[in-house]
Image (tube, rainbow, N blue to C red; front, side):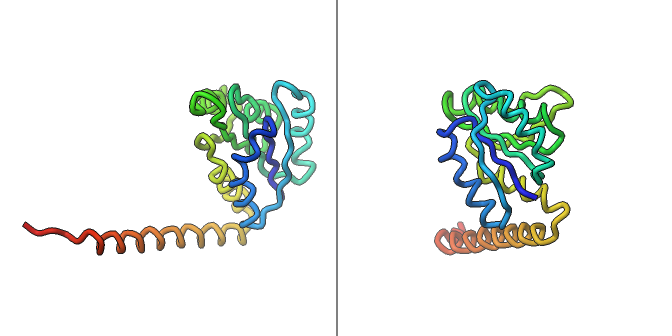
Length: 165
């Protein structure tokens, strides 16, 4: 299974680099397309409708401003769709609200504004439901993150020892 990453415009690609590098790190194949909910609605709908037949397991859709791409994608498939609101204007609040406010029955999992890495991790988690190798990699990363935080805490505790009155 692969992940389809669709972006509303070329300007979204720099934000999505963290998504691409995370998917690469997990060995998850992916493809990237520019699809606009407003400028290429028919092509975007056809692409999403055919995604499952093209071995896509998860769709990540990133867009800014009106940010209707994730919702338009979700309206045309029952595959999981993860929306990445891109902070093109208004600090990304407009994109966040456009992505997260979906009508009942058409879900879009939405990550933080510019949350490309978390979108990739969520896609990996979805694929890991049926892929033990991906599941193990996720568990290993969580444990490595836990150890890193505890090591940093020990370091800080030594730098700022408790003062007794």
